Length: 596
Image (cartoon, one colour):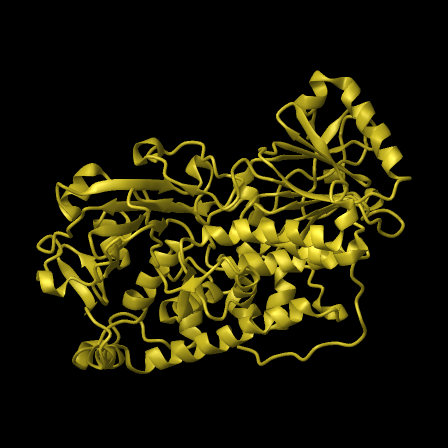
C-alpha cells in the first residue's frame, strides 16, 4: 500500500526542503535526538544519554516531546474525566497523582516500587529533594490529621462470599495463611526470590561495557538473566510447571482450612496490579506481581510523579555541568507537542504535529506505547520521493530478496511491508482509578462486621464480575479516603451503595481513553520484539550513525512496571550511545546466572 502523507500533500515544496536539509546535514557533524513520551522511559532515557555523552558534548541536542508538563500533578474534577474519550496523556506518563483540597497527594498511577528496583532508587537518590517513604504514603501540606488506616486484606468472591480474610498482620494471621496455602506458598515464594535476584542483577549488566551487555531486544535480556522461560509461558502454565495445586484439588476437599493459592491470593494480586488473571499474564509478570505484594515497598513522599520531573531535571543540570560553554547550542529541552507524523530516511527523521514541522533529528526514541501514541510512521519511496510508504517497523525488506508478495503489481517495483507485527497491535487492558473521600464502607453489603473490615478488599475473577469489574477497594487514609481500581467507570449507584450517600468522588482516571489502557494485554506470554524499530541503513554498506528509530517500551511486551521502564530506557540509551560512538564495547563477557 502506498500512502501520501497529508502534511506533504498540502505543501509539495516541503519535501524538497527536507531532502536539501538532509543533504546539508550529511556534511555537518551534528547529532540531534528526539524522544517522544515524557514518562519514566522518556525522561530516564534523556538522563542516561546526557551521562553517556558526558564531557565529550557530541550530542547537539536532546528534545523530549510530551503535550503535558513532565511529572504533572493534577486536580482536574472527576466529572471532566468520566467519559471514555481521547486521553490527554496518550503520549505522556502513567505515573500521576492528584492533590486533595487539604493538600494531601494521592497516587493514581504507579503507586509503589520494590526495594529491588535499583535503577529507580538510583534516580531518586540522585535528587536530594526526593524522599523515599512507606507505600501508599499520602503527602501533606500543613497539619493534616493522620488517622490510622485499617490493616490486612480480604478476597471477595461476590454475593457476600469471602474466600480469604486477614484483618491484621499478626503472627496468627500469617500462620493461617501458611496453613491455608501450605507448600504452594513456599514454591511460589522460592520462584519469586530467584526471579527477584535475577532482576536485581540487571543494573550491573546495563552499566557494563562488555560486548554482550548491549542488548538488542528484551529477549536478550531475559536470556542473559535466565528468565526467558517465565516470559514466554502464561503464569497459569508456570504454576503448572511448579506443581501448584489447582482449585478444587483433593487436599482442599479433604483437609480443613485449605484454599486455592491460584484462584484466591495470586488471582487477586494480578487483578489489582494488571487487571488480568493468571492465564492472561505471562510468568514473569505473575512473579513480579507477587514480589510486589510481599514487599518491601516504597514510594516517594508527595507522589511518585516527582521521579519523572526529577529525571529530566537531572538530565538538564548534568548537561549544564558537563557542557557549560555550550549550554544554548547543546540543549536538553521539552516541547509540549503531540507528535502525529514521523518521516524517516537513512539520514534522519522529520517530525510533525499535524501540519506543523517540529524539526529534523538524527535518531528518534519512541518512549510511548506504539499501540496508544497514534503516530503515522512513513518513509519516502526509493523511486519517487513525493510518495510515502508506511515505515516497516521491525525491519527492512531487502529489494534483491523481495518476493512477489512484496512487489507493487502496477509497476513491478519492490515495496515495503505495511502490516505491523502482533506485539505492536495487541490492545492494552483498561484500568480506571477512582478516588473518593468522606467515605464509609458499607460493611453489611460485604457481609462483614464493621470491626472485621480490612484495609483492602480484593476480588476473585467471580467477585470482579459481580462487582461491576472492580478489582480492589483500598483505604489510603484513615479519615475516609479510598482508592478503587476497576475495568470501567463505576456507576454512581454502586458508589453510593459501597461508600454511603455522603462520599465525595475526588477523581476518576480512565487510563488511555478509547485508545489505550494501563498495561499490555499479555495474551498469556511475552512476545518477541527488538529495541530497534527501524534502521534506514539496514540495506546499506555498513551502518550510519543516523536514521534509527528505537523503542524502549518494547520491554513492556514482557513486563510493565516503573523499574522495567527504567531498564528499557537504559538498554536503549546504551545502543544509541554505541551508535553515536559515545560508548565503545570493551573486551570480555559476563557471568551467566542460574536458570529459573
